[in-house]
Image (cartoon, rainbow, N blue to C red; front, side, top):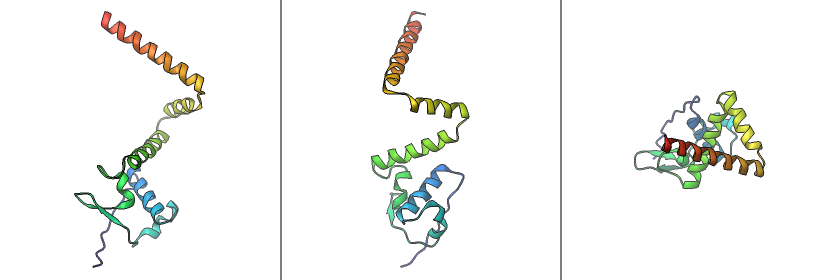
Length: 124
């Protein structure tokens, strides 16, 4: 039985682009070669609601292993941050450039600010 099921992807959606990238990796293709996926046979997994390509399981709600899902969501977060305003990107870059000592000092300072804010809230 050779039943073809067409799938559509929105290239403006980060999640759909990530799904296409996963399909490309599973078929040994670079993302730039995505056009070669047209008509390709892919392994499917039933999610209880629909059949989805196994490579897309991490991007499907309730499917995929915990590690796959965390990695998939981290990749999507990085994409969102890359498209964020310049001030947010600069903040993220500064946090990445912190040394261990600077990170520890920042955590201690943030804790102190939170404690002072909570005390002020409780006393006022």
